[in-house]
Length: 171
Image (cartoon, rainbow, N blue to C red; front, side):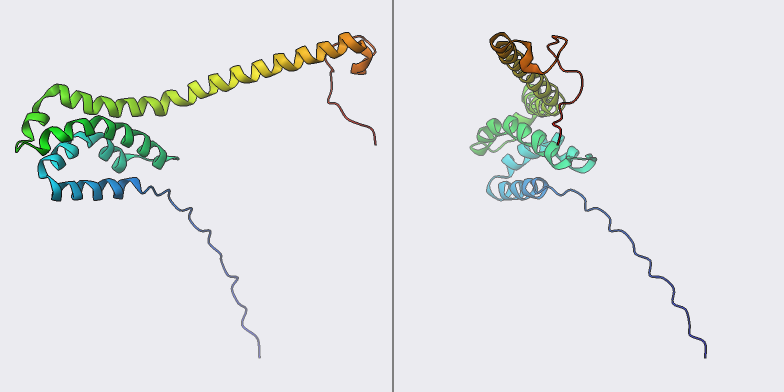
């Protein structure tokens, strides 16, 4: 009797899990809780947080959760000052109907977007300047050693200040 040959088991790779941010469900829960407490405040918050909600549905790519949090918290900071205005009143249309209020709410979301795009450039500039200062300090310390011990301390015979190749010790 001939044995049946088994087919090799094909192993499939797991799909990488998508990044999950708890900010979206937390925002939805907050809006629902606010609607139970004050429907007018929920209307103002819902209209004011439109940029955050849109980013939550359309955002893609790496660090989606971090971008959503940055824009969301900046947007929330722009919306919160208008919530107490409608809690005591019965009309949310006064706050939502004023174009300056809407510009302030959406402008705070724009500041969140600006932080996303400008923040890494500012951080790289600061780190680069700190590293340049560190290189200058090391060069000054090195020059002080050369002044104190002459160029022999470097191990170069040509009186050069900078070594040309990688420094390796012979074993």
